Length: 428
Ligand code: AMP
Ligand code: GLY
Image 1 (cartoon, helix red, strand yellow):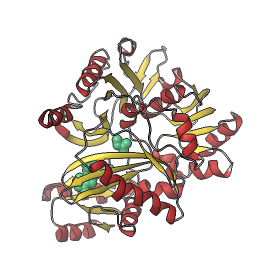
Image 2 (tube, rainbow, N blue to C red):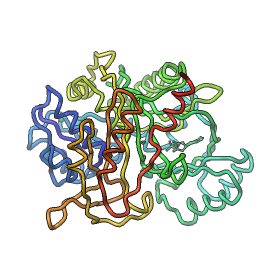
Image 3 (tube, rainbow, N blue to C red):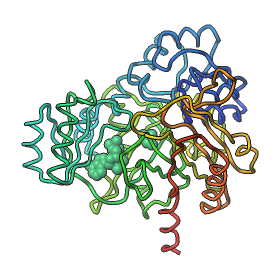
């Protein structure tokens, strides 16, 4: 097959890397890619949200399978456009992607299908939000309805924080139309986990478990980001995998099919394991970033064949094979991330890092400067992955890779995997 990967992050670099290892895939294209992807695939200068342009390229290049990384083109209907032209695409239709694109839709969907989730109210003004908070009490979580690149959620514990959050949502209107409707949600406590399955509309197969580090700073402090690191496998609370599958994933896939929005693609569920069982925090309509970087390095199966089968509604595998090893991924970000960042900063040391055994570096916001050297081009710059027989080894290897890489202002978490390793210690 000839495959096209849409997107430009480290997740897409990891997908390209896995497709190149797939026996079913002969050639890999990417749009728009980044400096790292350009070394592994033929890149096309078409943005991820130029849907007509991508469809025309897929036709011209006789692409057999298009894989979409980010949520935006899916929410805009890239799946529908490709389907209309008879092009095979792995990813949900616009209607099915609404499970991520509208948190209000997702919440009402959960209620319709008896899927456990936090209680909530929908508000459109600061006054309505205040009334809802008065009735529900602090702490509380405020969420923009629409897409906000993982940054549209604010946890509010005090009256001061409430004032600030209401000003962000309703005065500053930071999330634009995505924040026209806001969910005021009960704050859940417990252990958080994410769970991903590949679905063909009716059947599904789980991906390997993973843990994701969303906060900017060590110790899970600082603002939420797109993700600062990950590892696979995760250590899940006993029985939680099964509970999430039966109480959330199965009714969600069945419910979407029953509502005429059959889900073909990766369904990602963010879950809080509460004292009352698992509850949905969010759905995503795509692979997680940076979870994918850790998960796909462990995949033994043919990713291209898996995505093709799911896109065709013909998923017959019940289990995937994973290497019995661990992978840890550390995200290197520009100074200031998740806020405004400087671009164009020279990056050194990637080749040295890649020359280390068991280190893999995936590019995100990188570009080639006018002198031909590698430079930063945004917030999250690189994902440095280490593999090992154990998580401890994988973490050590990843950080050894990190130690060889430099760019001015480089920031990263130094505690990826540490909480899981501590948990494993107390369990043994
Ligand atoms: P989301 O984008 O909805 O996953 O929210 C981002 C992060 O905010 C989640 O990963 C959780 O850590 C946190 N969060 C979201 N909703 C809640 C909730 N109802 N209770 C506690 N934490 C939450
Ligand atoms: N790592 C969380 C996400 O991809 O949404």
